[in-house]
Length: 231
Image (cartoon, rainbow, N blue to C red; front, side, top):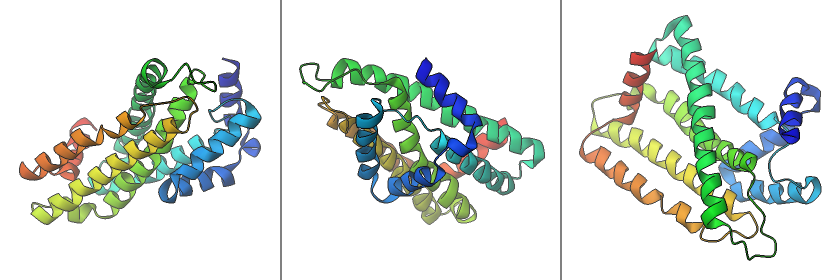
């Protein structure tokens, strides 16, 4: 609780946040994600905790969501109030809500099934670290789905097979990236074994991708209808 209090207290102290380092982490998550988790290990050696103690990464991620939400508001013709509803949905549900659910699930799985308690360096996995892993994996996914997809939305949201293929391929790449970075996050912890099981989740994702092409279910179009009906 004390660590959580210090973390959220720093949200109101902008000068104490290291935005340059957080931006470096975001860049590395796209090109060399293993370097980010190598830094987490160094952080643990100096601060004696795996989770971040600086909310700068979360602040930059929230800023990116605000900017991308403006783009989606224009693309989906949501209007002024629709923008705020969209932003709240993305932040509270897509980012935080799903993040808490995924982090809690993997926290339980990692501590009960993936942690080798006989390993000399093993220690219980921190829930806050699980949430950080989710945020790390979420950023490239959002960059693809809220960035690349948004820029190509006019092309992707068309009743053609090429549009279907490009749209669903973006979602497939984003999901695989999320799985891979999550795998790296838990593999970086000492005393963990069988973390390859996380990679196996790519199998149902691949099956869903192939089925979507066969059934001609365009994810970009489905996303548009989903938000327009709810917002």
